[in-house]
Image (cartoon, rainbow, N blue to C red; front, side, top):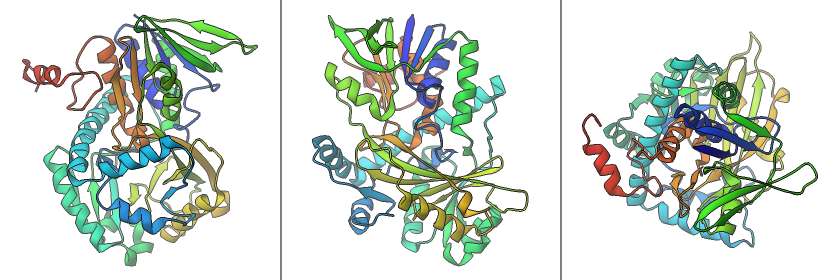
Amino acid sequence: MQVMVLGAGVVGTASAWYLARAGHAVTVIERQGAAGLETSCANGGQVSASHAEPWANPGVPAKVLQWLGREDAPLLFRPRAEWRQWAWGARFLLECLPSRNRANTRQLLALALYSRAALQRLRHETGIEYDQLARGILAFHSDDDEFRRAAAHAELMRRHGCVCEVKTAVACIAIEPALRHAAARIVGGIFTPEDESGDAFKFTQALARLAAGEGVRFEYGRTIKRIEAAGGRVRNVVLADAAGRDDPVAADAYVVALGSYSPLLLGPIGVAIPVYPLKGYSITLPLEAADEGPTVSLTDVEHKLVFSRLGARLRVAGTAEMGGYDTEVNDVRCQAIVRRTFELFPGAGHPERAEFWTGLRPATPSNLPCVGRTRYPNLFLNTGHGTLGWTLACGSGQAISDMVSGRVPEPEFRFMGIPARARAALAASPGSG
């Protein structure tokens, strides 16, 4: 089939790769001048099945109340006169219920483990390089109550296939000696030795080159104006030509992988998805030979920050700001990340050399991405991955390729438009285990 993928972030590019490998003729439409230049550009770098627990958990509502009014809060809610924001917030509170949180964690973990394995296979098959490190992820805690809750949650993760090791403060520092400067603040941690890290931007650009070698055509600098449907199917996508005039282009099937901008194009054709932009921040510090930064990827749980060593750089990312489609860098929030970084790692280079970045994460209230079919049989979604786009990219890309090709995806995940009985039939088929 002729398949058109809308968006060349890490998720869209991975979708194009797997669709091409399945034998489809693929065209990718991207408004930027190259792949991976928006939300995939400078994220935290973690490939983290261990982060499968959604942000929506029973302890979050109380924390959000404590953070109100704090410009440097890990999660900052900026109220707007916009019904989509308030509807999203109400659904987020519903997903914080313990039963919903457990169910969402199981599904997210199933897709994350599948995706991590898919990334490892892709790396083995292609030799792709992206400053990857397979040294695990250590999530360390500075609050006793949060650490006890995390240790209990680790047991749930282990039951569903994620290797999680509860570590003492001393063991945390043995895993990452650069944490010794913060030894007095650390009460313990959870180590997931099978998780990884790497530069999502380098990966996306390298995969785009590999995909082009498989025949994928990338059309950069093309603005998508709208999707047009007729007769129960998507008829075409209307792009803007060089003069801004309508330029309709058609395919047999369409995959929307536009991140936070997906609902803006889908709404006019009657496809509603619970995706809202959650602005995240990162800093990147260049490291010289004498500088001391972590080499194991870390998560500072109480401050909602992640640390990844990317070659001669240290990437620190996190926090979330819910305030619409604003993409301005907030210096206060970036400086808060810098301060915390040098509290933990005083030898990690020079704070004045930190490069600031922000991007809009396409968040759903449950943290479960929207992957699957829509009411239009030739329109598919691969969006809403929130903070886990890099983690879930290969798995959801393979899954969307399966669905476009008429197959049921492997993971035990609630894919859109795939009946439960179809998943059960797959699980019962010979060789499915």
